[in-house]
Image 1: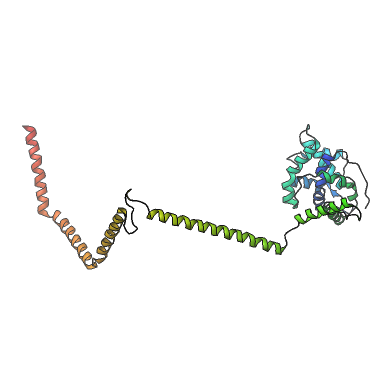
Image 2: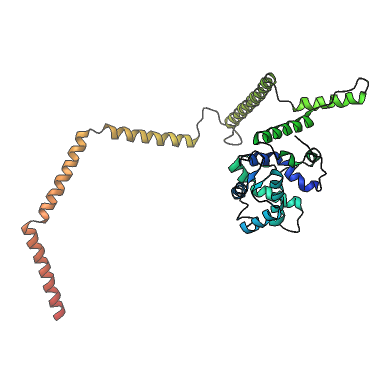
Length: 322
């Protein structure tokens, strides 16, 4: 694989693409590049639709103009893919803003769509320290290789980053300064190391002991408070001259006992009444109602009612005529 060393013209703007280069390579490989490592224009437009660039940020006519400016006819390489992304950011967002802010806004715009369609989450914390290493590699080196080679390159670059930030150089034999640096680095690495199972068990035991001790303290304090309240209730004075003994009941307690005794007695009397008595009483009431109904509609009662109404009517007429 041929590597070409190039100087980065704008580190701040390129840091956005450099920090997300591995993610864009994965997206690029999912659009089925050919043996030359290029994708078709249709796949690129499909990518723009998936990440909501077309119709949301740029129109299809402007997109055709951009592609014509880059002299792209049929296929797009990865370097052209990155340059198109950069030109889209320059054209769509505010003209007065720097290129770094424009690319950053574009990454924020397409981040959720990339996660949904490609299962790739773009970085938003752009590390400028990674530029020195990434700028030594030209994205053109990806062109002319299969997608499997591109994925291998991405994995190797990730390993280089990890080894760069986690490796510690061995100390010299006669250099005391290097020894102190290595010792301090080892201490930091020990702090960052994950907890072993034995240590985690000991930590859990300590946490449980602390919780148990705190609960025991709370229970003891609650018991002490309850005992103090009981003592205060016992020693509470009825008058300033004599204190109430625990055997003497308060007047409220007496009233309460009388009331509950009355309720219990009433319940007992209700439960003691036999069912036959209640049945006979209901039957007698029904008979009385029936007799009243019969008497009210007898012939003599009706005649008497008609006579009383006629007599009252005659009296009213005589009173009016006089």
